[in-house]
Image (cartoon, rainbow, N blue to C red; front, side, top):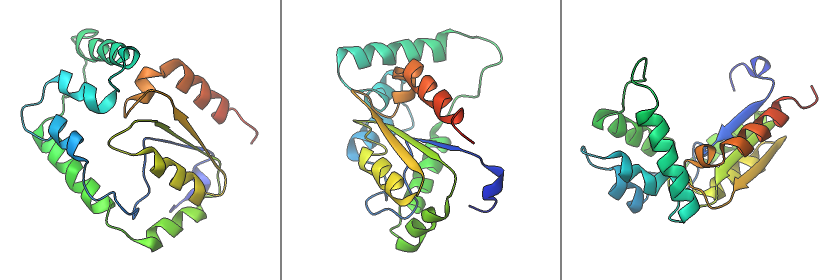
Amino acid sequence: MTRPALVRRLVLASSAPQGADGMHGWAPEVIDAVGNPETSPEEYLSVFFTGSPASLRAGRQTLQRIYGARSEDRDTATNWATREAQYDAVCTWGIPDHAKLQRLSGLRMPVFVANGDSDPMILPHYSHLLAGLIPQARVKIYPDSAHGFLFQHHAEFAADVDAFLGGPR
């Protein structure tokens, strides 16, 4: 928004616009899964993947890649303070404010908005709202997936992003 000439194309994955009504906090099922200091990787499955066998299989494969693929040079694991800070940010971001929503019409570059059809953290209707407020946006909702749609549908998402970024200049 501050320097739009620096961004040729923009990808927004599981994103919601600042000021959207209903974004103030997390849904109860998200709080149940990750809203306590001691959360296991398995508890993230319900937030990042649906309950279908295919989605849970993709979730377990993702957990295996995250926790079992590398033992060196790993990112620092998130902790309770990280989740508390994210929750506070979501609460602030989600204070309804029509003026902040209207700012999105100032984005003039092509924008690809993507989400899972069952994302409990960022409901898919926020993806449609984003796409409706941004003049050159297109939206894609991936089936049978949640907040981790880009892990579950990694090949399709990567191909979609590649095609989007390689589009006409």
